Length: 359
Image (cartoon, rainbow, N blue to C red):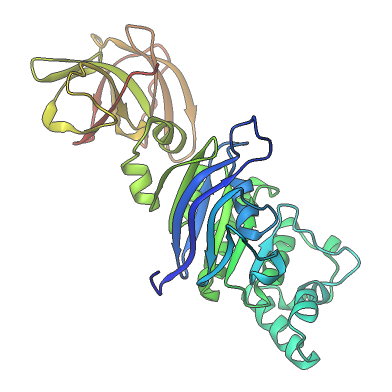
């Protein structure tokens, strides 16, 4: 194992009932030291179960988990959570309501590290400074905002200097504006601490903005594991393309070395990849991201604006093609195109992806 790898999973599987599909199904991945990993997927896909399995709250049926070169789960090997040197931030923060901020953060130090009081006081001050709450150490949790409680929970997890911090949907209980602000703060805190972290989210924007690496999970299966940039630009399966990029899929037919669609024809030179393609594939769906659709009013256009949302920095248009298919386009143009306007639609991306038709 590379010196830079802090966590390694190999074929990790977790089943709750023998007749049901596994909640986690043969997941294999490595995490480099200091990186932030986002576990991304819809509700019920198995991402929280995978996090709990790494933490030691769930025991895998098979597979191997290695943290800091130590096998913590393998055939015949099981290391309990308290001996895995991990920090945990729960979705509801799990702060002790009867303890002040200082005592909440110090709790793990006093109970697991057997440190002297002066060392505890110094370390609590360090992590509270790190999360920007040093002046709040005498307050109780109910006297703090949701964002401040989240940072106290993070400080408590960081205090014992764990190998990895695990966060179960850490921003889900916060208001939208607070959540957006704390995305940046959370990333800065983790990077400043120089610690590896894994967090669970169902929000693709949250995963893209916070992570060094993202693992997309569907029905317990790891569908893609890569950087945020690679995930957005190069989805390897239709599920990732739909869930992460929220792309449009336009029926296409191959003829005369061109992929023909309602929006025009595209040469094979513009096609990057066909997922699971066969040599005789003549029908597929063309993936086009919302921001790659260019919409221009045109009296003879065969596409109609059937809906609109103003999102502040951009417009979101719902388009109806001659076949009745609905597409979505995002544009930063200041010009508003009225409902019912006929438009010409073109594709700006120089390279396109095809996926098999939906079964």
